[in-house]
Image (cartoon, rainbow, N blue to C red; front, side):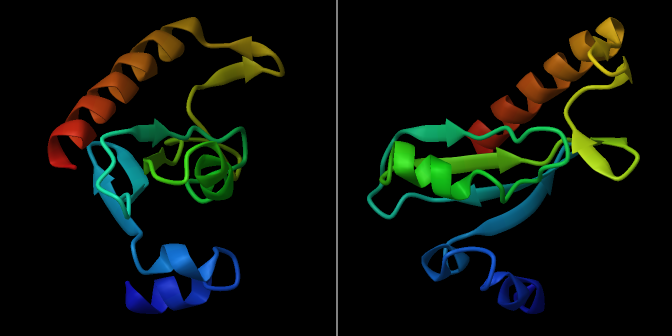
Length: 116
């Protein structure tokens, strides 16, 4: 894990690498960045197609620099792109999958809330 974090120094502002916790909970790889000020606020950051759990860290800190950050990686692969939901074709979602994965994401959020 430490070698992984060292490799991220050029991608992620140095101040976050000391506090970041990359973990797996239920079916999700995710980052939890604890607040440096014991904030009770946690921002949930959900990346877009092809993104990952690191993409929105800076945006999260711009929104609320004192908040905790919970940033899961979409656990559906479309080719090599991470997504949160399956789609049948461009702009057409698999509705059953969206319903199930919404429940899965809700379960993840609940479990992460209990853990952190």
